[in-house]
Length: 109
Image (tube, rainbow, N blue to C red):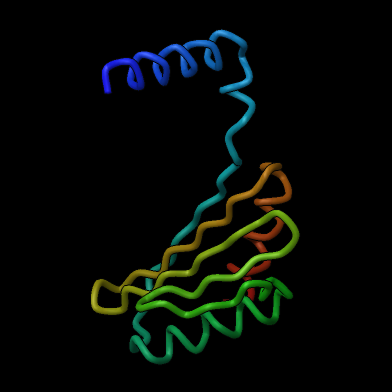
């Protein structure tokens, strides 16, 4: 067990030292808006926003969240109506493209 932890620590140190650790992570674009919608209506609008923005690859509804995506990008719209909040997040390799997808779902909502 100690050898495994030491090997993991050494591998992590090598990645950090190489500089690839900083460039390996995805880009994230987030936004939020307040809402007075019911939970059901918020979820309907979230689903429509994802589909209208043509970001429904991998489309799924789980609890308070609607998931989708396109190409190498994944998104989530989370409706928390009892708190008056809708949260948007898009993650992928390029920040500018994540922002473009973010604008599309935010404006369609």
